[in-house]
Image (tube, rainbow, N blue to C red; front, side):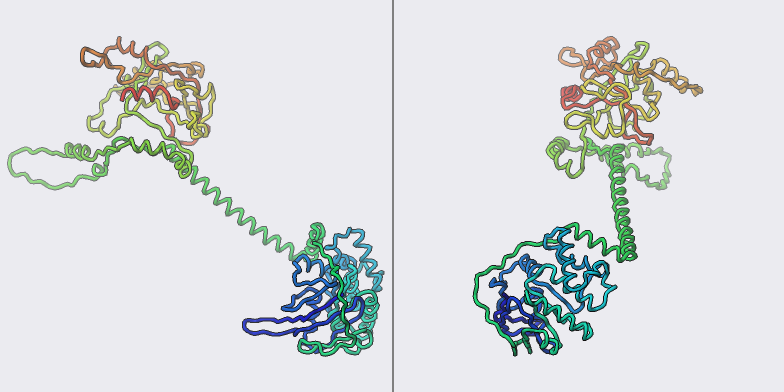
Length: 586
């Protein structure tokens, strides 16, 4: 049934070795009551733990029904401990918040036994040890002897082949000890019972075999047994604790410690809430920073121009030095000319051709490192865009028809040439659709977003307003009225202005004509002549210009002060006429 061959157990602590069992060999019958006697520290409990699979031997072998255990896996040992062996300890090891029926049932939870069968077997085991009338009591309501009987019932409920008892009577009085010994002797009639005890009197009375151990060696055996070799007939299988049982045990355990459970849950919730707050604040801060960056880039996009000027030297205040000219001559002050000279010498030219190639080649890297972005190319061509006002007067939308340039020549040097101030390229994605940079800020209130290269969209603020000057310059109001207003302002007259509203239907389909600078030149022999001052010829040029019309009106979604977008946009396409005509003029 059970055989130990040359079993040794050595405990190591650093370089120190303690031999608990020294080459022990012993066999046990299928049913007998074996008592193991010996002094404390002699190796009795170690031997019992090795037999029960609670500890592993250093050398030798343990055979169970002639099956070697040296090759046992963890699952094999689990099966052996749960099915083949029943344990009875001196300290009972009962779960105090479960009644004794549940304590005994617990031993069956890994045996894949149904709930009803578990209950029947547990009741039968308790009745066998004389506790059938106390199945609903908890351990705290029982005496020491009764609790030990519960432990024995728990060991027997699986119907094990071996029952191991470690000092089962150590904490009991004499009378109760005798009752427990009688019970164990009764059990040994149909299975192997191995008991470790320090009480030789009880062992002599109730045991059928006494084994004495000293210093890790067997020094006596009252009824030795030599097992006959038979075939291996020990089979194992995987066992596991069911999820419902595990949840039930955990829940019942929590109920026994309500105060601690509540405090632990409260402390844990504080930690979870704290972590959630930190994560939310961190996420919110990151989103705010990212949003601020997006808004900043919308308002102040990165610009790389063909020519750049370092104006730091111009900002530096001039040095004032006292000059004392003693003769009667008048001297020149070269401050303005020196500044213009400094400005001219500080103009740097950027080679944009390789930079443009790099940008187009590195789109994937830019999307990865910068995020969604848009690159637009502006040509210094100063296209003229004409339209007609409600009275049929031809208007140049760049505003030059309404104001005179009275600025000093020097001031104009600080303003780079640019296209029409009322028109700019609409930001779009690579596929030509409108970029989220636009759609996140604006919504269409009438018409639709541009779909073709000659379609325009008018942008208004949150209040559906645009500047009055733009209304005149874009041809929505009579140009003559605006000229009268400008004239009165030039004469320092007060002008009372009324708020004017225009129906969206009068704005949609409003047509514009786009004229490139090269269109103003007419071939005259071997040269070209500028005909921009010839109104008749300009009218003909405008008629032949590229047509574009407004197809949508977009309103700002929020009332935030953001100057990221001009009032009026022309849609961008990869092959739009604007770029094509610009390339032809270069």
